[in-house]
Length: 424
Image (cartoon, rainbow, N blue to C red; front, side, top):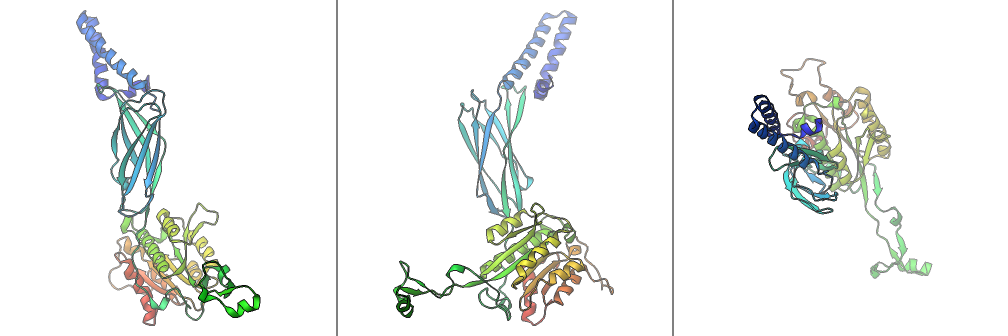
């Protein structure tokens, strides 16, 4: 009974109430015509209830997103396929998609009557101004009787997600950090691209240039041999993103957390363009190690799109896993908030002799809107500058980032120090 009454619209409830009043008044006053009108209203409401309840609203929904990963403000086309799984045709359905607020207004559309097994497709576009993983679905369908007295609503299970990738800002090339090919400082830290083809001489293969035949080796082995040019090697770059909630301040696109995500994505893109073998490490409480490791640009952007603020201990697992990657040297880049002294010294030790390391440390108080005024007193140095001081003493190139700083400007500030002969 409660389910039936919940199906009534405001108009339907008024009709039912008026019908009861008219029936009661007609009986008490002996006015049979009034009683007939009341009964007519009640019968009409009852028929409408039966009409909307006779449909099971059993439909299947499948969604296709093209593309499933988009950049900020880029549109993604969502195709919703609705299939009737009942043995009878469906009524005309009013449908509304549920979705995260960041994707915009909820699409509404009308689905015509579908024969058993028939499918209807509807398309709409979504876009987001913020990076992240945004949910689409479930679909809510409604059926209304012709008189508008009853309304039945059902949610059809099934969801999809739109992955909005972080913004990538072009960064200036730093000649001091190298171009990605060759030595780094005094020690070359290389990662071979093709380990099995590093030999100088190999057997002839169909399609090889005859001018590359190595005649002395051919005469010595009796088989046709060719010169194998050395494959280029990539230098290693390890990028660490600090996602601790206590290390950041501010919310939304103006907060330090989103700034750090944009900066990390920009650094990864910059190093890939500079022909580095890039390894991105981010905190991921869902893994056994507590970190996620990606060594490709698409994987790194996906990881940064999904990252959310984590607990205070997440950085320790991050630094532990990074020590394995940096043990043989290579470029190290840290993007995040101020660190406790112990973690700052652990991070400083990741830089190997002859290698370069860059730290971009955000100042949370600036992003929170609490800028210090006047001349700071002795001992009141911010935690961000304390962290950069520890790293600079270990040979790191550093920059303290405040609110409003462009990622390209922060990168130039950090790597520009070595060109001038001093770290920041």
